[in-house]
Image (cartoon, rainbow, N blue to C red; front, side, top):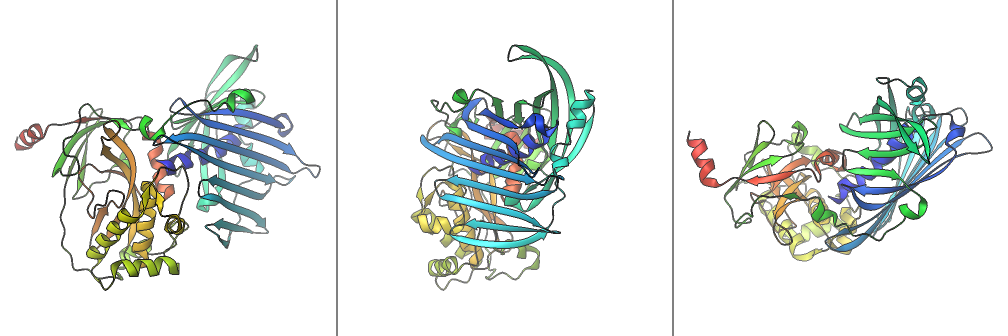
Length: 481
């Protein structure tokens, strides 16, 4: 859940740049915005644009999230500064995230045809050379043609480089309507602009005045950025537990959720093909207005040994930005946990039990990685999962992140957004180290798999799902027919 929130926060920034598209001089200054998660206050954002004496343009966005997770107040900051030369070429990008685990920094600077990217995280610094992005000030201000034309239906494309993912994402924007609103006591022409990040399929709707002021920006019908006076935007006298408020409610409780052999549900909401993963554990059937979901407890016995040499899954052994599986601390800890075990399935079970027994459960709005969790030994489902995956990969067992929903009835019965893991032990199986499950139970609904970028596909469904529990006898009767 928190990783998706972070991704939504990052997506605000390209949208701001893409939406403010008049003469640069008309945009110089600052604006304050309230941030609302499913219409509940979640923080505030500040953005500014300045023109330097040498003609370069500097755009700053600074978002502060103040939310509750498990009744614990959490603070998180996402800062982004982009600099363009007087001629419009991208000069540099500075990105920083601050949370309970400390700051993470990305600094990207153009040098000829190369982008030098420096990442500082978990006390380590890495440097990479990437191709120079296509992004320029022209991209950032390209929608000027949309507003100048003043006509519904006009469209424009743009690109924006994201340092955290080392990706240049492409976007498309279109004027969907032109209307009049009263703004600061004056009747003002307002443009309704729809935008889509093509790689993610995430849509936003932005309302922009004729002078370039963003009045409101809605990302995936989940996060809203609304123009407000500074004092109102910074008002933090609110309480919004994002874990509870974004859960998918159920029409009735589920009995014995952890011990069930099977489960049948109807899920209502914006589920798309991007969220459907069928396997021997779970099956989706698309219906008119909802999807049927069936899951069952699986069993497996396998003699696959590690390190796994199967080429088709080799990418899931490699270290990554958040899974530093080649670090000697993770390698040594993993070997200590499994001892002389050589069977991948048995080793996975030992790792899941060790993480469950030793990582203290706390709720935190932070972007952590495997090494930080190994040092702190606390966190929620994200921390449990990334540490488990880091340990598994350190042994040469392919592992990857899985995200979706799990049934919980401790606070309020419902399906809560959750993260767990999948490991390859001759075939892919799902493991939940947060609940100490070597095989994930039947109440897990996988809707995404892969890194944070892939998990962003959950954004359109968060807070927009509801679930009906189907009686097992009815399911059996229907299947018999």
